[in-house]
Length: 339
Image (cartoon, rainbow, N blue to C red; front, side, top):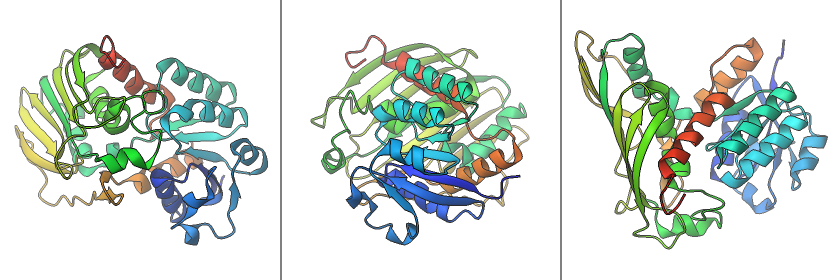
């Protein structure tokens, strides 16, 4: 039985720092190495890196560290090749969203993990939000009856400083689009609950930023369960994030998960299934200075992942399921000017 899982993190930007902190604070995990081509990215986390090996070359880290699992927290366009290389070195992989920018590359990631008998996991921390847990339970128990419609709104602010911070942001080749960065967690939940997207009719535009990708989009969706839906997203909200929400309209109930990061129940009216009164919503957003990111729960996901590997069970999203979000994004973007 594994006593502690040994982790290495590649990419020490905002999200990499979050991985480093939650690994260090997990009693069943041990951080043994980090990698970033720019050493100054380690600024602010020195206290977590005592006696930790630092590499500037990714393959050298894979060759020379004894890590069981590699956390890939680099720009989107590097996820696929880095995941495949880690698998070829017989390392488990935990890759940040999106797992890749192309479904065909995602399939190659899955193939590499299977060939090398390692696991490929995708970060989907919003599945651990309390409102998501409560809604998922209501759906699984059939309390809502037939679901008719779903509406998803991602109304966020990403200012010019956000795009200027890193050269890969806003770039079509390296970021892919706002759906990959800001909306993929929401799509993961929609597909988890209502099935794959069969049809999408989409309008995109770039209205408020000097970037190659869209900052506004609307899409009408049909899921293979028969549920129809609408998806609205933007990075143009004035000043700060406004809303990240999912509203479900069903035969026996209506639920709106809202707040800015799917961290509140704004409406719950379900036949003979009241919202528990003793629920403690502890999900808190992460601040990145000039803007705020998604809700937390990387720590909950990391703990589940460690126990999942130690106990050889299911839990955290694996490659095949993570790929569904990428396929959905491709379908939504298809036939638009930014495909």
